[in-house]
Length: 504
Image 1 (cartoon, rainbow, N blue to C red):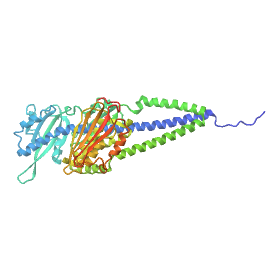
Image 2 (cartoon, rainbow, N blue to C red):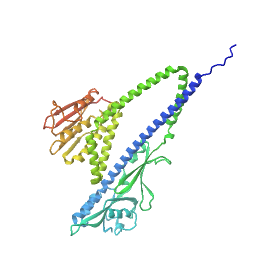
Image 3 (cartoon, rainbow, N blue to C red):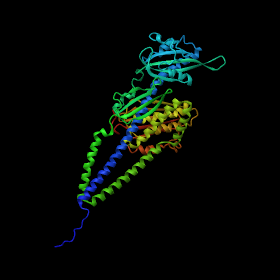
Image 4 (cartoon, rainbow, N blue to C red):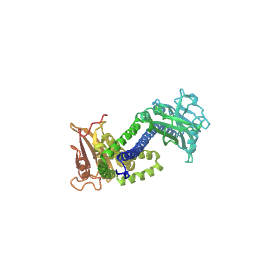
């Protein structure tokens, strides 16, 4: 009988167990990676939503706060008298959210429109320690428009006020402090229609708050119907609202560990790990080598795709336009902060669209999304070119699928190579017409024109490149009409069956 010791080695059971554990670890790492990607995506989306909420809230306020400039202009025109302001006030008070228009020479309220219902305001001393008066005193010290509120109004209810100090020329030609003008808006009516009401529908919660200067406590200004969950990790953004600082908090309604998909992925990972162990037990090394070879091929294809997509993106963003926009922003921040704020938003939308086109399914996007990027690009150029650039839109509310980055290059060409070289500037027209089987997008300019049969428009993004790109979409075509000195017309024909139609 052979009694030599039996050689022990790595049996299939132990190999399968080790493989299962390794697979579980890999899946856990992948899960953590994708969870991190998802949370990063959530953060980017929250940043976009908070920026939209801040922008539209600011636009709603700036529209109302411009009424203070009307009051200031009247005082400048009349030399400090508001006796004849009633007819003007009647037009300004047509909006139901406007509570009152106030003239306070020396900081003491002497003129109120409408008078009825606001008698209690007469004689109110904005230089005192009353609610909302700290902003009035800060406005006087800084000489700029300040926003106060929301706070309880002495005439009843809650409101938001714009305080603007007024300076009038004296006999020596110097500017002399006259007093304050105030526009009082009803709260929360001034924020009706705010996009914050739709934030819950996107799976997030939002709260806009400020530090009340009267009691130094946090004061909620706007909040979603479903508030931020207790203990949630919030993303904060501070925005300047007329020399006041408001803070926007954003957070997901559901935390990552509360999502059923996370637990399903965890259980799925366990199950897959067991299957991997069984596969290694039954198939061995051959299956492993094949899987590694397939992984390498997938990674190689993904790398090629990423390079192609990155090259496509970089080809669409002109470094000349990029640097000029940043330089313009730098100047506007000092000279025209509100214009700088709008240009930054336009530039953000322009870049975001160009970046999003990388992952556009099938290489097509919504026409409305393309047009939104076009408008952002146009607004940036209008800020830089001023009256030399005029843009006319004749675009109905229709929406449809269109090859990505097709209308935008046409508008860029029209501005850069048609209008900019022309003395005195010109007009670019963008229109949309519906035909029986296709949509026709027209981009026209009355610029310097060019010879379509020649070498094209200098250093433009290239009509040949655009033709080559849209040739990948059956039925799409370009039609170019131009001549030197006669402007340019370019028609983009997009078949209606290019992609699934979009519900409007």
